[in-house]
Amino acid sequence: MTLEQKLHRARQRLDSAYDLEPDLTSRQFVILSCLAEQDGISQTKIVEDTRIDRSTTAAMVVQLAKRGLIQRRRSRTDSRAYEVSLTAAGRAALKMAKPKIAKADRDALSALNKDQRVGCAAGGT
Image (tube, rainbow, N blue to C red; front, top):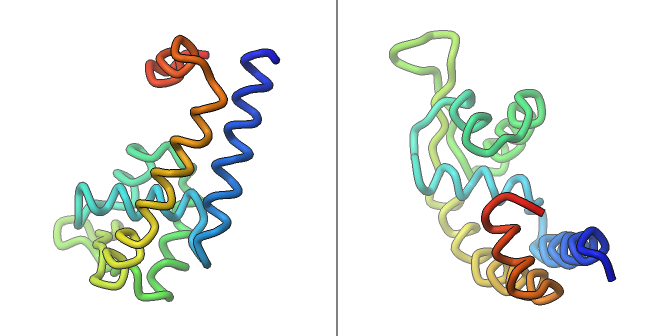
């Protein structure tokens, strides 16, 4: 099996694991994780840190706010920008999802040999 096929299989395993977490997509998990590390940051900073495009991030921020997982408010320093913070419910959802995601990561990476895992961790393929 080629490395590309193994990576595809690993990605499928990860997608399946994220689907097991009710109402939390992999990208939403990434945004919540980002906010857990840097609470009260701008949506622009979320885009930069997660590499999720601006329009997708904006839509997900609105969805997560409606669900009460994050709070979105106008920036005190820039009235055009929003600051985004994780709520207690968001922290709880993230805490519940983390063990499942960690297991999914391990399972997905198990399809790769050691050198391939190191290459992926370094950003190469």
